[in-house]
Length: 277
Image (tube, rainbow, N blue to C red):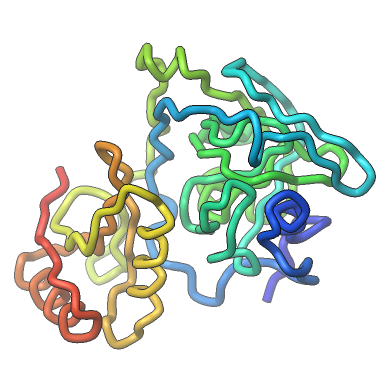
């Protein structure tokens, strides 16, 4: 198992312990899961939306390792350049500082002072790749590091090999209202027939729709954790204020219906067949 590039693996969880009582200890190791889902390089950006900012909760001042941090509580721009790290399996499924469940396969990140929740554009200046992430956690606390990315966000930026310089820019509510946030382009789906499918257009099985990401993430883990279901990719799409949990895509209607039958037998869920264009 490869070690995570984090110098302090799990400090986002440590902060959750300090300010929300969410974590019980700091793990010694972090890293990827043995078999990450297929198609993660095509998971779409987080979709920015205007969310109210609280003065307390995850946005109250806090102290970690003898240093005091004062999170922003106003909708202000913030631009930084520094090192990015990422965190993975040791915190997958655990509460973040916001109280949401950490999903290493979602487009999220941890930041020391951005208001929670916030959205930010992160750019890798080496290759020009950009992503939009949702800030829902606190960290990283190693000197020089400005953001701690989810596994998938780091994968899309090609940062899984270690810490690397990035440019970070908070997306303000005014920018969201004005429609100034464009999704980052995804790589083309050039997989050969029979390869693991990737996020994109096609036939999908909708397994559930939730108003909160926690419920969607629990269903996603449940489906992926049942080997008998034989579903290799389950994606959470944030659309129209709902988190839609969908499996796929499938090349034919027959394949989708066969997969739907397995899901119903194993999990008692009656999937809805949908087409994404």
